[in-house]
Image 1 (cartoon, rainbow, N blue to C red):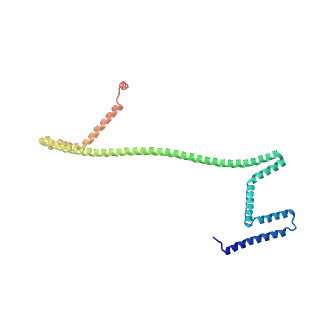
Image 2: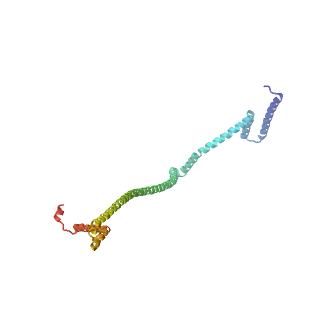
Image 3: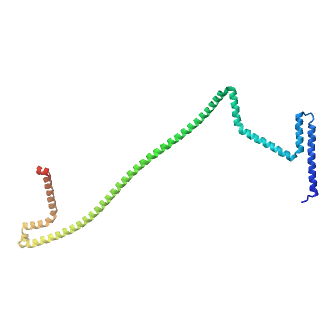
Length: 272
């Protein structure tokens, strides 16, 4: 696309301004050259030559490159500073104290560093050792606690087993007693029935005996012996219990005498 006349005029004016600025800079440098030595004059001529061959953008790029190179050089110097410092230190000690002095200095320095590292390692080792001892103590205590708990558990299990056995025995005894009570009640009822039946049978037999016997038939009711017989028949059911107990007592005494006091056949006992 074609440029307008106004744009063309602006470009021409810009070029004229650049030329005039370069001319003014050259005139200023020429004026400053007065009274300078050859080296200064040579530097000024180089600056003038650079201005003539490189415009302001070119000068800006060169300045940026110069600053960047200085920056990279500073980085390189910083990176190599430890090596440079070590070399300078070595040169100083070798010059002042010789190789042996330099080696002694290194031995002393690294011995100190080793002692510091040793102290730190020993401290760390001691802390680790203390921690391990604490863990071992905790483990031992927990092991003892678990052992005691197992023993207590066994005791409780044995007690529980014994308690269950005692409960079962009590239940069995209660059930046996209940059955015994039932049987006793049944036996008492049956014995009561039998006793009543025997009592009525005795009364009937006694009445028949009195009626058909000498008490009525032969006039026994008129004599004292006849009434003694009646009283004996009446008292007999009431004293029969005591007569039975007395007979049982005599039987026990006889058995005890035969087992403890009666003579024995020793030879017969030995042969048995």
